[in-house]
Image 1 (cartoon, rainbow, N blue to C red):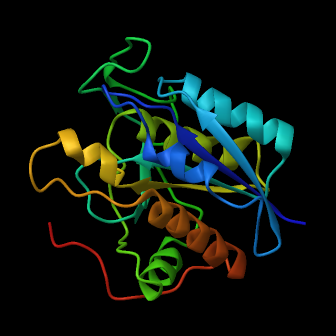
Image 2 (image 1 turned 90 degrees about the horizontal axis):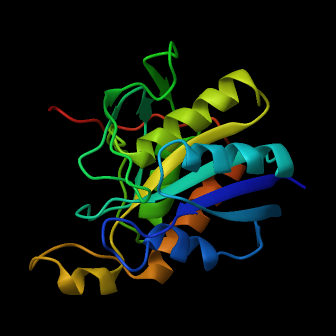
Amino acid sequence: MKKVLITGFDPFGGETINPAYEAVKLLPDEIAGAKIIKKEIPTVFQKGPDAVYEEIQSSKPDYVLCIGQAGGRSQVTPEWVGINFRNARIADNEGNQPLQTSVVEKGPEAYFTMLPVFRMVEKMKENGIPASVSYTAGTYVCNDVMYSVLHYCHTEFKGVKGGFMHVPFATEQTVNQPAGTPGMNLKDIAKAIELSVEAILESDTDIKVVSGETH
């Protein structure tokens, strides 16, 4: 049986919930015949990646899909690239606020996802979930985890394929946000994750579709 490790962060930035892990908790224990391993990780530079590293060591998954909150986005967005750069607009949950530093000293400038993100997006859209590929995971802890996990997969866990996906605010989080702030029902976010895992398990070779950004 294949195994998929799916992680989500704890709340940060003054929020009382994080839709990433709240949605992960709603997932079934098996998807498309694969065992699902769920893990909450801290929104803390280096400690977040360390928690994923330890779980990969322990669980030995075939795939790792890390989920993060991207408040303000209206779609579920699998990420294309993680960059070797930290630049924290706000402090993390332990007060760390690195500015213009590396994630991994002397590491590559960037790693591209190892997951079929375009296939994942098409699967979600076919099932009524707004989705698109994102070309920036930011410079906060989400990117820290994405870059670090891909670094682990390229160096120490070479049989594992990893990637990252951002999700919108949960609907209930938008109550205290400016009018018009997008949100998504937690059940729909969980469904998006489940569909993404199904797409990965169907084939981890990606498809070619007309997409991209002009700026």
